[in-house]
Length: 137
Image 1 (cartoon, rainbow, N blue to C red):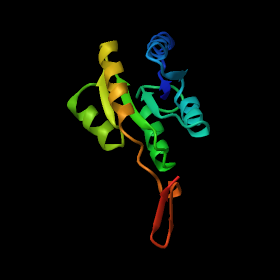
Image 2: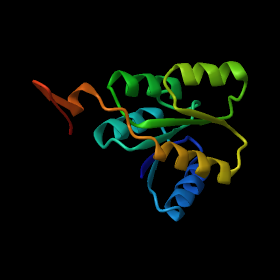
Image 3: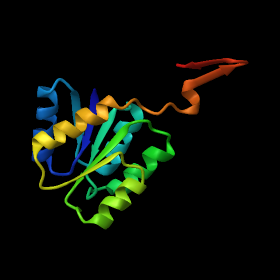
């Protein structure tokens, strides 16, 4: 699975991408919200691990813009904002999962695997329809 990590802590981003690679995922990282958004739009990943407290553009704005662009990437929010209200806000904004820091790397990898088992929701551009023939490209 192709994973983009958008995390402002460069050391943590390296740890996460390293563990993802050890688990046979293709992983890259960006340390700025605007750069992460651009990377996700130019070369769409299967999954985005997204911090909320980012320079350039905050995580909820990144999430909103990805959803506005009809990105089918699954989004796992990984943040220090762990209160119930924060989690509900993130999930209602379009995230597929939410994990608060501090966290266990094993749990993060298990959540990545679980999200990887879910098929991306096809968009209108992915579905061709002619008469009674329907094709998901």
